[in-house]
Image (cartoon, rainbow, N blue to C red; front, side, top):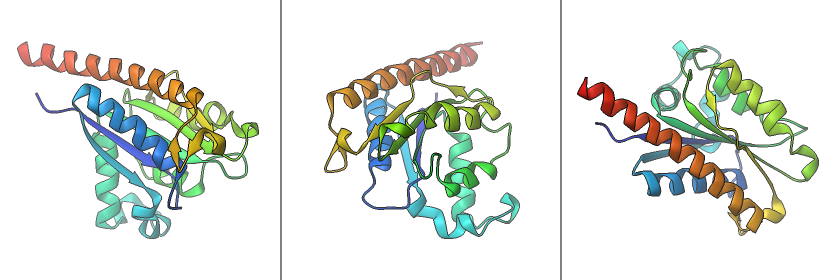
Length: 188
């Protein structure tokens, strides 16, 4: 059986990034508990080629690799900072380049970061519909965090840490189900 693969993608183009830190924390904590391997990207890794790509068949190699990594992952943890009430445009553009069937039934953790609590619904009213379009297996716990939830760009508040624990548990259960299904398929 192959080692499960969790991919994180943060739609932030700034460094350091609270969004990337949140995504990394969830991915790495889940991997430590499940034995999965990890890959984490953010817009800083690909934004010059992403913005210039309108057709995935004409994407440069770095973007093709990212799309392949996302679509072949066993689970995704995605996050975006909130700008003007929604996820970033380049975050959406990346997912516009992904085949609509490529994320079907794939477990996805949704996260977002913002400057105030007034944007907290972006997870449910922005990100959730986007991944529902793909028929992804969207975990019930989504995480929205604001600047006071972090210290030195790392998750710090008790409330945020509690939500991270909850979503890591949920993702761990999904990965265990995938592993068990693979074992059953191999023994058949």
